[in-house]
Length: 337
Image (cartoon, rainbow, N blue to C red; front, side, top):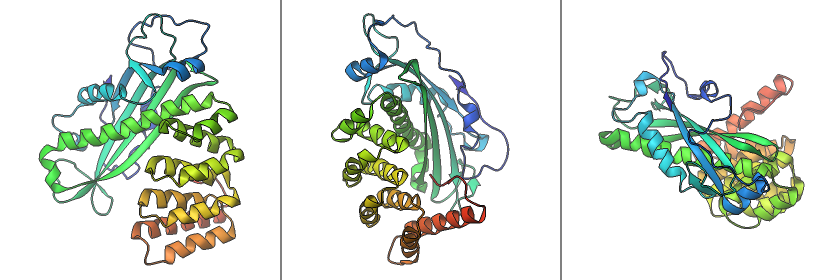
């Protein structure tokens, strides 16, 4: 476990810009001895049958000095996260691999930062601030498979979560920050573990996983289907995008955006009208991935519709600005994912 607090003045909204440098560049060496698993059981099969064994959880704190919270340090967060990992679906255990067990094993390294923002989204000191503010919690989870699962040895997932910080919650700031960090870290670790699992699956396996719970496997399969541009998964992704559960729907919508299948447009347009902002925002961003004139007109209509939530209209304007800048620059990689 390591704790490092950055020095320097202005931290912008992109608090995690330097967090990549904090992540370990080599697979995590387990802190505890590993009982040898049977060489006859491939890691992918072991994950499927028994779940994965988390050998070690490391945490690195990357906050500037003016964001430090009394009573909340790296050691406190590491203990909390190690306990949380045991309850993640698909994790069989934490610590040394039990003798005789044939589970795939992983090491987990989590880099955590947070930044207090005022109403203008400008950085400000966390302690001593007055009034309601926003806390941007940023977590990057790196999971190293030991040995590799399929052809993948590492997965990295990042969560940037702006959360309201009401003034009345400042009386127990350590508890407030810790709870938000733990929620973001759990999500990031779950997603990274799912990415390793999905990378070793066949296309047919992904289609089967999309069709039924567990939810973590559906979400992992949806992401992988989008990465592989697996158009055969379109119907299953549309069904998942219509889910009443927020997280699976958001992931499925993002995957549909990557596939660019015109038949999915009615699903995306319907989900923009939902009252759940996270789902509506994901559907809007998926539309932005299509890049055709008719879809651009749809996004313009959202930006101009004053009956829609202000945040959604702002997102639509941003997508239009990004697209216009891309055309001016002759194209290029999108940056709004």
